[in-house]
Length: 151
Image (cartoon, rainbow, N blue to C red; front, side):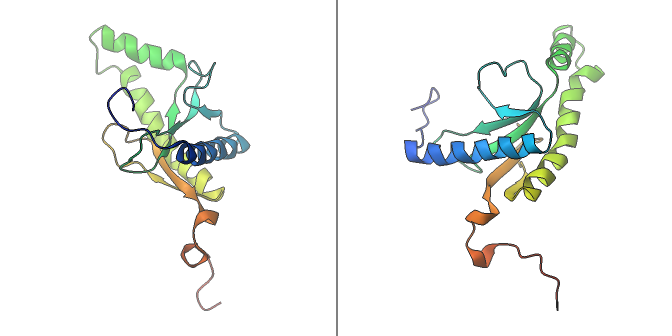
């Protein structure tokens, strides 16, 4: 059970989720993006694509997601502005704005690498990308073929 009382997914489910997350990290690195799994040692002060694995037994959406983290100095500038009582400072909005701009690029890169990825539909993390699996995991009848009509 997690610290908030939610049941954790069984180990075999977590193995599959972690494999998917590692594949996402590889695909983003192949595209040239700094990327890493959330919680890895020595990544707390890095900017780039952060891949999250939901360990809960039940998820309302995808169990793997990706978010963009700005440079730690930019994050600190936002925190400092908030602490100084200036919530309208450009530094406060910048990480979220950049995250939303990066969302589209992350989705396109993941789709081109064969992942099923889409926008997050969540008010808490609207700039995140949801990853549901690989196209190759779909049954053949459900895989996009991209065949030209009548061709």
